[in-house]
Image 1 (cartoon, one colour):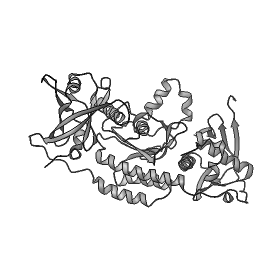
Image 2 (tube, one colour):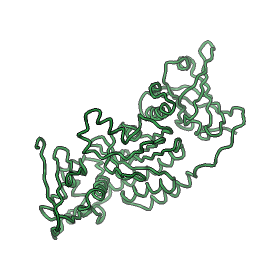
Image 3 (cartoon, helix red, strand yellow):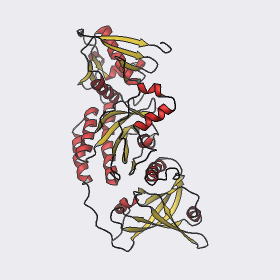
Length: 450
């Protein structure tokens, strides 16, 4: 029976180092360990290039090599006959291998030694079993295909983005048994991702930001490729470490305007999958676990499918018809609520919004909220449309792919968590209402003012 590369993908996790045998032009053989054999597609693998070693010198002279990989659970061994094609020193493949190698390095105490210089791509010409008696495999954790089937059916039943995000997290929790997960959306104007939904954390972290290129999440977004690590790694950690790094660089004063990222303090496994809306980066689907090796290839493939559904919904929301102008301004004026005033302060420099001295939100979402509360105070307005916001040049929305629906979801959820006196509720496709239960006292701070 022909052995396929897909059938032995667990051997390519990096849990057990692989062995490569090469031969110089004069026939002198060389055998050495390699940190990572990375699955590229059913016909190709990539090997980590870290050192200017004899192995690399041999491959440059003679592009044929033999690689032995070992199944991490059954100990079955397979011999791959491979042919060197090229080396990639940047791009999605390189960044994915770099993230995975960081996990291996941290797990083995070699974080200061392992550094990826390139991804050497090989064509796999044949695979044979090395003689031996493998151990029996434990039963699978779950049937990923069956879980994906249930998950897709659940996502297909939702059409608005907010319901899609909540359903996706419910699928990860109930079908895949992922205890900690989140969805982040992309803000192209500032090159960051912001959390819009999470599950399993003590604090939701809605509104927490990650720059493109930072950690597993940021790199997956920047390179638009899934990234999965199976062991703990300091380089791709989040949470407390991010804040400690900011404080060590004298940025502590800015932390009062940063929402803490809801990452696990002792994360052992992480997976990040980009959410694409057509050609546009919409966001990232992320999960993590305190258990090493929690996410395998099957889980990665399943999350790619789920992410594609979220991306399609985001694209649909951007393109869907919205309320026309006649619905934007109702004739009725809202009544003034009674009680103690809710003090709302806006810093014009970055649209940071504080409510009763507590930081709430900033950026485009902050600009939107300021427009809404001003409309209530000055005109007693409560009814709005997405279309009206899109056409308002003062909000700073980018010309295309502004992800307005996701920003409104972010604002809605931050208000639910931090400001019960204000709420946003959806009233129809492309329409929403601001609910105000306390009088509002507004103050605006211009740049340079104290």
